[in-house]
Length: 50
Image (spheres, rainbow, N blue to C red):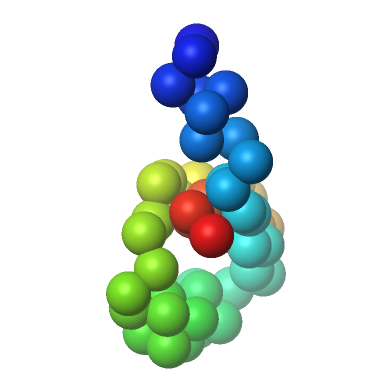
């Protein structure tokens, strides 16, 4: 839990409505450290460190 708390200040979430937008953002931000990518029925969430 302490590890998550120490990272929480720098975590950001980007929300996309389709995979084209998500892929374009990922390509443009290739040097951004990605923590996780979550998929739901109509959204893609990219969790990254800022």
